[in-house]
Image (cartoon, rainbow, N blue to C red; front, side):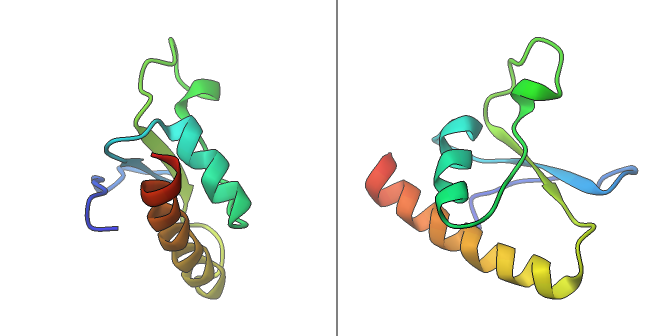
Length: 84
């Protein structure tokens, strides 16, 4: 998803990815329908004001990450056309 932005993490096992044009909560629902569960800032940030970022784990095996990336791409395309 070329529109998505992220920085190299200083540590941990996940990326915070900025997604444009849709809230993380709304996209998370679309992603779940495509079989991928993503984190949203509401449950892990103070104040919950960062509504355009997803938390994506890079701890799973490469094959799982590849499949999830493919499904996220499908969800993103679907979300852009059908949801928002």
